[in-house]
Length: 174
Image (cartoon, rainbow, N blue to C red; front, top):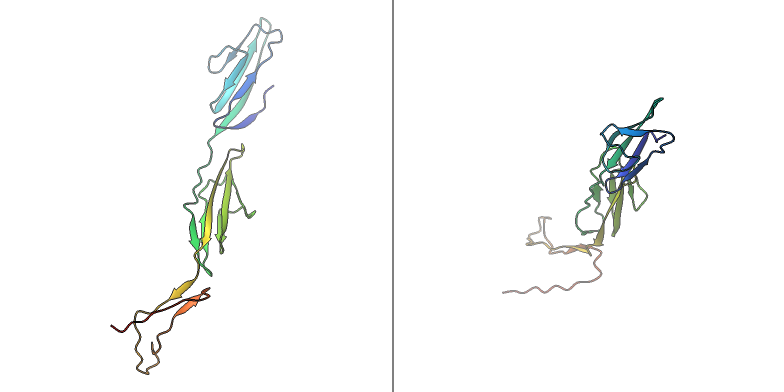
C-alpha cells in the first residue's frame, strides 16, 4: 500500500518499492515492469500486481515542487524616521517567515538591521534571502539662498539637521 499523496522538492526522488508476494509480475501505468522504481516526476502512479488467480491495483500521487524564488533586493540604508516595506511576491500556498517572526507577505522596517525571510512550500522546499539595512547617518538641510528682508520668509540662513552632533561651515564672500 502506497501513501495517497507525497510532496517532495524538485531535487529529491521517491523510491517506490512493491513486494512481489506470490505475484507473477507488475505493470505500471507508464508501462514499467519493475518492482523497485526511483521516481522524480510529478503525477499519478498506478501499479498492478498480477498472477494466474487475481490482480490487485494501488496508486499514489507525487508532487515535486520547485523552490520558491525570493529577492529582497540589494543592501540599503534607512534614515531616522523613515520606513521601508519589503514584500515577498509568493503564491498563497507558500509559507513566509521573517527573521522578526512575522508571517505576512510584507515586513516594515524602521531602523538599521538584517532583514531575512524564508519562503517554503508545503513539501518544505525553502529559499532564504537577506539584506542589510544600514543607518544613513544624520540629515542636514542647507538652503541654497536666503533673503533677509524682514518679510518672515527665509530671513535667516539656518541649517536644520537630525542626528547631527556637530558640523563646520565656511562662508566666503567672493
